[in-house]
Image (cartoon, rainbow, N blue to C red; front, top):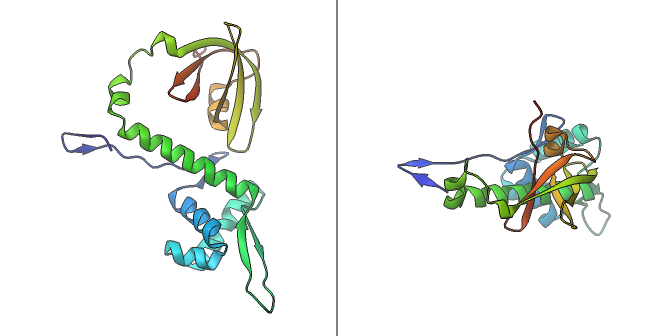
Length: 189
């Protein structure tokens, strides 16, 4: 973490859906434990939460998304039941971890903090026109045809696409940092 004169910069990461909190650190721990343990009760024990709390948390996510993130199955005479993450559950966990890792890297990157508010190097900005926007549940894929004869595809959050009101035909800039492509769009007056 970045520390200056006894100050420590911290932040919390969570995923939202239609303005409602969906998955934070605790929820990601729950999904991760279910993925590892293949059982809701074992996962609850592993993360130090009650079975009832975990079950209610999963029900809340299902109610918000109208789709389950965990699939349960009953056991038979020879063995107990279990649980596994659905494709949506896997996707949410992966997205949360990706964002959490990214934010963690930024918080620890002193060069980034020195550069905040400064111009981005021109060699890292590529102007172009959006060809296609494909919105998923959490992320969106934005395909940009650059002014130079090349097309760049960026995977960004669905929320960012909606916040920037990105649609096919918009003039944007592909802002490249390390191995990631972000999207910048001038504010409309």
